[in-house]
Figure 1 (tube, one colour):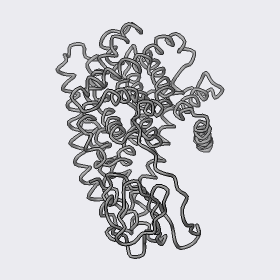
Figure 2 (cartoon, rainbow, N blue to C red):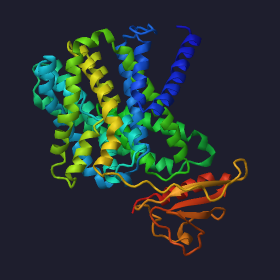
Figure 3 (spheres, rainbow, N blue to C red):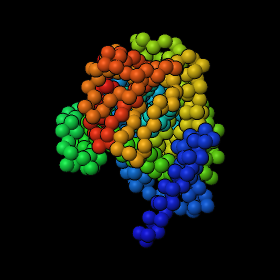
Figure 4 (tube, rainbow, N blue to C red):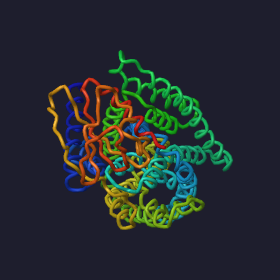
Length: 484
């Protein structure tokens, strides 16, 4: 294909994806489903007529894309936010994944007439929640902070577990003489090597990004991509989970105060969006709609069982010793959104040459569409019905205006209850000399700040500063956000 034609096609798909995402947001349809539909329209059964059968390329694209999504998820989080829920999240992402695979197997065996090893394999493929969907959903909801953090940590950690389990099962089914010990050893090796590589590169990344000089500030996103690629590649070459490694490195970079953090996060959010578009368009290209009718009933039944029975049971099993209430467990059970990870795992199965690979892939299609449409659109509504949302901060209009083209900028900072500055006096905030707290919005009041004025949780601070001082302000905000 001519380079110009290829670029025209790629540009058209990306432009269409942006427009479709805007339209989907207006009508309340998840953008991921729209991207999937776009891929099906471009495919051989649609008007696009593109015949895409390179499963190996799809596997490579999926691996890189999921790595980018997980890294961005770690960047947008921080260790301080997750450390209080790391225990329950670890159980959800390990015990929960294994429970989901085992509980799904009987349904897969009955509905699709798969042999037992392949039934467990299908359960492993759909056992992880989707990082892209969960991170995107939580950004725009008011789900109680502790639950949101548990979901963030789970979705970042359960992808590596599910991938390791899937690869182990593929190796096991490919070697009939091997026993369960080989499967356990493969999963342990994947997670152990991934953990070691991730911790090593996380320490290196934290040291590096805390010391990036101003002279190479423009290359900060390049440095971030380099560290992520090295972390993933090193773990993968050593036989470990690159996904676990890259998520831990993203978490380290996101937790490191740096004047370039905002720049890096914005860059990787765009990269993660591109990865989501690519993953779901590729899935749409691989799907053959004329083949779906034969498995539609079984696929929808499996998807319903996952949503209503399997995921809730897996959550109750893995959180049996935690302090979550029944209402919180119910919400965690409903929040098992499936998406990018099962797609990537389905391409792994397809590329392995397994005879039942096509059946497993088609089943994943129905699971992903059902989960995204129903769970993703109803999660916040259920949270409100269960009274598991935090109140929204009071919306206030800026009490002063700043010329958008002038030398001064005005930025808002919302104070959370566990921020380091909650309870501090204005004189103790540590702002640079050229910046000041112009005003504090508290509930329905507008308070002119003085040195002894105490900052409270729920306050909105309006900071006035010279535009050239943006890096220093980012450093200050990073310190303010530190959890106590």
